[in-house]
Length: 556
Image (cartoon, rainbow, N blue to C red; front, side, top):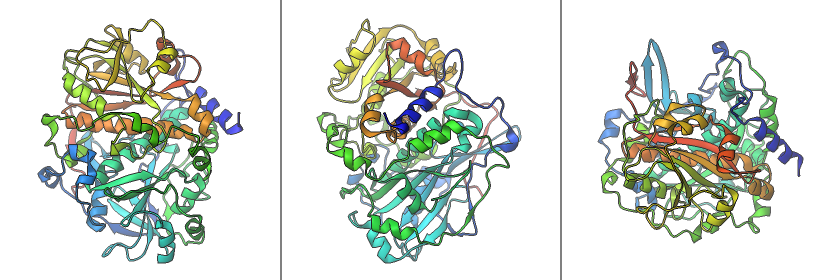
């Protein structure tokens, strides 16, 4: 076992919550050092983007939410200021302001644990007529909804950068500032930051689909390569940005076959002149050594995927075994506008424990999480690794109990052997034939669902609560420690999909990062590290917030 893998496993075990004790965290929240949730580069040129009012968004009926799952059928938008503005407005911008008891705070399109937003976003693009005169690297600033111009580079370098990609391609880079989350959540924050990356990836995916674009994860890029391209190499200290991933955005009707950017282009970035100084986020900090060790261990080399690609059957090729039609008819939501769903997404604070969802809606939501022919999962260059253990609480014509939903082909017997032998494994009579969905236990488990999710009532009051069980030991041994964040990204990608599925169907979702890891494993009989519980997600009908006023995102 490598030192990096030992460090990742040590972090994973140390960051678990258990019934007897929580993972290490702050003893109290020191509001005086709460990190600023907006990073800005002072001294850069600010490129203001177009803004849409709530009334304008409500007036847009096309594309519909269902059309997001077939972006190749939409006419690709031209790459210009309006399309770039729309992409960022519908993926990372402020979605609304909330006000209560004299306090005002912003919400964003992409969800975040505790609304703390560790994820930062960058644009790498060639010239854009009337907007970017030269190839540029920009940092996205959601508060003013603008791009901060950090560097310009030569057309020759852009040709190297975009070589092998479809015409009209540009790139979006994501980074994490762990301090933003560790301030509140301590050691477990490294996990939550990775969930946020997954949510951000899928927020970008849906916003791109609206424009007739697709995204692909540049899976062969190394951590330091990404840092070089984004201008954050050499950052130090608790407020440093940790490179996460680089994504290609391109017209949906074209193929993106390359997995990385040429080394020649990356070398040219080492000599760029970078503009702007980042603002200080906190006057002082608390150091979490365990997070630093995990982040260091998870650094990815540029050759990792290339070396493992041929021997792995975990890539997208493996998905061809799935025989699923993602366009199962749902007349009730076929006309729901995509932008209204994207920008209307909220996390449920409390849920109505007397409301039931239709079984057709429930099954259709599960079906949408299958990867086959689903462009929403185009960013899963590895995997899928995750299946859903579901507490069904309130679904019409479906008995309350514990269920399992398998998202990969031919995995039933393997997973069945890994858990308790006394489970039922009964497929409900009304379950569609193409869904691997089985009842394990028929019992009312509302309170136990909440208990496992750190006693959060929404897990009990929801129509269903899903626990995301990921393959763990095998991918770590196959790929190395760098795959650890990716396992959480996949869970975040699934969570974002469930958020939007809930919103489109008149429900509401909520990601739950606080749960008791090993007690859940023990409940279903999982031993060792073959599978691990990495994320919980609740879907139900929200209760109205009392005493909270909602204000427009950019009213000024």
